[in-house]
Image (cartoon, rainbow, N blue to C red; front, top):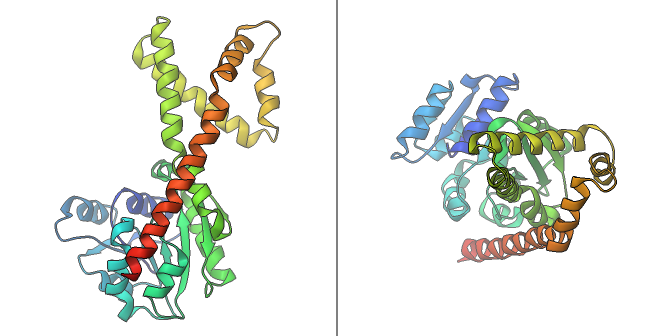
Length: 275
């Protein structure tokens, strides 16, 4: 099995690191392309042991699986460029935000097997949350392959494509929400006299530890919260303030807002591809 990546940025590099470290594929079986001026990323891919090129069609010709890891605004251009060399032997996997299966299918040969993936940036540290949706021609074996591939860099689940925008609003944009929460907790620590570096370390580790418990304990998060909340204690006073300030509602609204924006971007991408 040979894997090609069109695009060689951070997400593409993270995928390569994850799949080679996990033994999913050897680095010499991977080829990546980028713009001729993108010297830094091409060099990084070479350092990871991959073959590199500046010609996208060369990636397709030398791969069984092609991962499109470019900005959404250039996906149409890229797919039009490679369409002539795509055949039904290829599985095409896109990690481009907001580009629908329908849009990609329209730009490629009708029998192309396509899977759309929505990862998030923590795949860079092998802690990503990815979901994928199958195109009409993609098989169960294709879905299993993609599930195993992205499980090398975190968790991966299959969803209907209709969930993709909501996933973007939740886990796609979610790291930014958490960074803001970590920064705010650290600011609180600094206000109360804890040095900045230690405050950030404590806040980040608290989020990491709480997330690990939420995933591994098999209990409702409300139950985990109650473990920390003693009668008349400091935690319940803080939680009361957070509830009065609307933290829960703000986070729900943030996911909703990001979802709606993702839908709008998807519509724009669809219109662009037909123009």
